[in-house]
Image 1 (cartoon, rainbow, N blue to C red):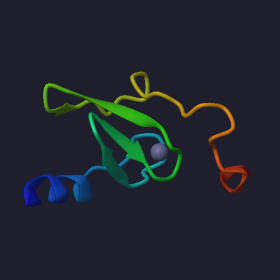
Image 2 (cartoon, rainbow, N blue to C red):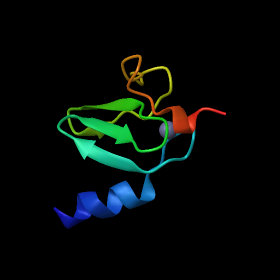
Image 3 (cartoon, rainbow, N blue to C red):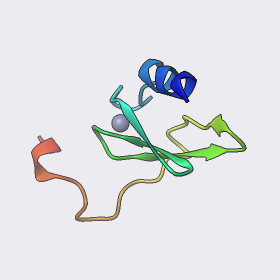
Image 4 (cartoon, rainbow, N blue to C red):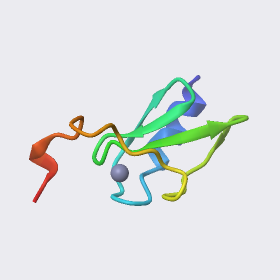
Length: 64
Ligand SMILES: [Zn+2]
């Protein structure tokens, strides 16, 4: 599965340009914690499709 690893290295969050980590059928941004769906093996990297983390899950350190 090294191909996917390399792909994840290339991809970044369209909102904050953070790095992704794969979580089942989601790509999770390590910076803003948005979750982007993977549909039929296609990464849907659209801010409008992203799911924000539950309230309280966001680290206060990321807030200005
Ligand atoms: Zn992000």
